Image (cartoon, rainbow, N blue to C red; front, side):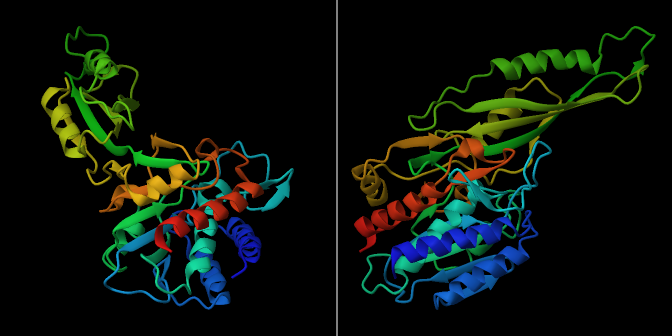
Length: 355
């Protein structure tokens, strides 16, 4: 297929996706647009809930399998938008609209790349593409639900905005709920066990906590207290204070290890993880995908942001057009030439590895 035509039609698909509401768990209509695009190219696909997926035409069970994945759900637009978030339009080379950068540009670029290689025979890897749902909410019906449905995968490229540089590792995430207790009382009476004052020590402890093991790719574990809640009346000392702690975990620790450290040492009454399943992820620097990207002049780095890599059981590389700093921002956009370049880089990268 002519790459220029694929690119033009991929950008047209992105415009349709932008103009179709697709908040997490509400992606039915965008899944239908993706189905229509694949049908246009005679690609045999399947749909599982709002996940649309396909394998290359000459899939061979005995070959290793490379997953191409990105998502078509979006967050809800924030209140600072000055443009209509569902109006896809181009100004000064920028394609504006909700989900344009995160991660529509990546998704349509990977779909175009998959279409380019769909009919190839004798590839070194099978290809599987999944246009997944519920990434933004880490929902139960996203990529995680597809791993028992699609063929077993050996390595993955996850499309997220990286300026087409190689995110060779990604921090995991654990969110903790902590409770600090005290003695409830009337505010007018003495109380040496005020739960709010007791929180001061805990907050200082969390602020000063340093985890011993650092990572070459991902640096240190990053812990941040992000929410605090206590009390309902001005004249009542509350019985407890609730904290929420966000921990971004490097590849030197498992999420379970981080939970164990905090549960043994944090000066709180209790601390519990909401989930331990979003672990850090990485791909060896010597992997063919990484080496091919480096040979093409792309740089490598460790990513602090979470993606569907966290649910994958295999090595994975995060790579895509767009800039992560634009994600979830007001008046979100992606440069049209970033998509054009992204498709070319994806195609060349795979040519070096699978052809």
